[in-house]
Image 1: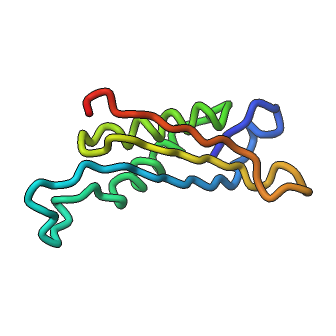
Image 2: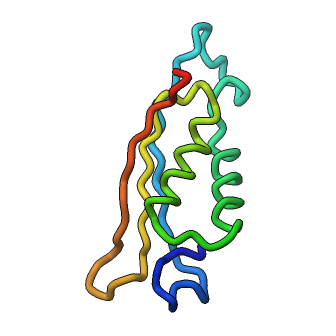
Length: 107
Protein backbone atom coordinates (compact mmCIF):
# COMPACT_ATOMS: atom_id res chain seq x y z
CA UNK A 1 0.00 0.00 0.00
CA UNK A 2 1.00 3.64 -0.15
CA UNK A 3 2.33 4.20 3.33
CA UNK A 4 5.00 6.27 5.02
CA UNK A 5 5.91 9.76 6.18
CA UNK A 6 9.01 10.23 4.05
CA UNK A 7 8.82 11.78 0.60
CA UNK A 8 10.24 8.70 -1.13
CA UNK A 9 7.49 6.58 0.47
CA UNK A 10 4.74 8.63 -1.16
CA UNK A 11 5.66 7.73 -4.73
CA UNK A 12 5.19 3.97 -4.75
CA UNK A 13 3.53 1.11 -2.97
CA UNK A 14 5.34 -0.82 -0.23
CA UNK A 15 4.95 -4.41 0.86
CA UNK A 16 2.94 -4.65 4.06
CA UNK A 17 2.11 -7.71 6.15
CA UNK A 18 -1.10 -7.71 8.18
CA UNK A 19 -1.82 -10.27 10.87
CA UNK A 20 -5.25 -10.39 12.53
CA UNK A 21 -6.20 -12.21 15.70
CA UNK A 22 -9.90 -11.81 16.48
CA UNK A 23 -11.72 -12.87 19.61
CA UNK A 24 -15.21 -13.79 18.47
CA UNK A 25 -18.39 -14.34 20.45
CA UNK A 26 -19.44 -17.98 20.48
CA UNK A 27 -22.75 -18.81 18.83
CA UNK A 28 -25.28 -20.08 21.37
CA UNK A 29 -26.54 -22.73 18.95
CA UNK A 30 -23.12 -23.52 17.47
CA UNK A 31 -21.87 -22.70 14.01
CA UNK A 32 -23.60 -25.58 12.24
CA UNK A 33 -20.76 -25.67 9.69
CA UNK A 34 -22.31 -22.60 7.98
CA UNK A 35 -20.33 -19.60 6.78
CA UNK A 36 -23.19 -17.26 7.73
CA UNK A 37 -22.66 -18.22 11.39
CA UNK A 38 -19.02 -17.13 11.56
CA UNK A 39 -17.00 -13.99 10.93
CA UNK A 40 -16.02 -14.04 7.27
CA UNK A 41 -12.28 -13.60 6.84
CA UNK A 42 -12.89 -13.21 3.12
CA UNK A 43 -15.03 -10.12 3.78
CA UNK A 44 -12.38 -8.72 6.10
CA UNK A 45 -9.62 -9.28 3.55
CA UNK A 46 -11.64 -7.67 0.75
CA UNK A 47 -12.37 -4.64 2.94
CA UNK A 48 -8.73 -4.47 3.99
CA UNK A 49 -7.61 -4.47 0.35
CA UNK A 50 -10.04 -1.65 -0.42
CA UNK A 51 -8.64 0.30 2.53
CA UNK A 52 -5.08 -0.24 1.32
CA UNK A 53 -6.05 0.98 -2.16
CA UNK A 54 -7.99 4.03 -0.90
CA UNK A 55 -4.99 6.35 -0.81
CA UNK A 56 -1.82 7.25 1.05
CA UNK A 57 -1.56 6.63 4.79
CA UNK A 58 1.32 8.17 6.70
CA UNK A 59 1.64 5.84 9.69
CA UNK A 60 1.40 2.08 10.20
CA UNK A 61 -0.36 2.96 13.45
CA UNK A 62 -3.11 4.69 11.48
CA UNK A 63 -3.48 1.70 9.17
CA UNK A 64 -3.67 -0.64 12.17
CA UNK A 65 -6.41 1.50 13.77
CA UNK A 66 -8.43 1.53 10.54
CA UNK A 67 -8.10 -2.23 10.19
CA UNK A 68 -9.24 -2.73 13.79
CA UNK A 69 -12.25 -0.51 13.07
CA UNK A 70 -13.10 -2.66 10.03
CA UNK A 71 -12.97 -5.82 12.12
CA UNK A 72 -15.03 -4.39 14.97
CA UNK A 73 -17.94 -3.48 12.68
CA UNK A 74 -19.11 -7.07 13.10
CA UNK A 75 -20.69 -7.16 16.60
CA UNK A 76 -19.51 -10.76 17.06
CA UNK A 77 -15.89 -9.54 17.13
CA UNK A 78 -15.19 -8.70 20.76
CA UNK A 79 -11.47 -7.99 20.43
CA UNK A 80 -9.19 -7.28 17.49
CA UNK A 81 -5.44 -7.69 17.71
CA UNK A 82 -3.87 -6.17 14.61
CA UNK A 83 -0.22 -6.33 13.59
CA UNK A 84 0.97 -4.26 10.61
CA UNK A 85 4.53 -4.59 9.35
CA UNK A 86 6.36 -2.76 6.58
CA UNK A 87 8.64 -5.35 5.00
CA UNK A 88 11.13 -3.40 2.92
CA UNK A 89 12.22 -0.52 5.16
CA UNK A 90 15.65 -1.58 6.43
CA UNK A 91 18.04 -4.00 4.76
CA UNK A 92 19.10 -5.42 8.13
CA UNK A 93 15.58 -5.96 9.52
CA UNK A 94 12.90 -8.34 8.24
CA UNK A 95 10.18 -5.84 9.09
CA UNK A 96 9.16 -2.89 11.23
CA UNK A 97 5.69 -2.24 12.50
CA UNK A 98 3.17 -2.07 15.27
CA UNK A 99 0.69 -4.32 17.04
CA UNK A 100 -2.47 -2.94 18.64
CA UNK A 101 -5.40 -4.46 20.48
CA UNK A 102 -8.85 -2.89 20.47
CA UNK A 103 -12.07 -3.94 22.20
CA UNK A 104 -15.49 -3.64 20.65
CA UNK A 105 -17.42 -1.00 22.62
CA UNK A 106 -20.64 -2.83 21.68
CA UNK A 107 -19.47 -6.11 23.20
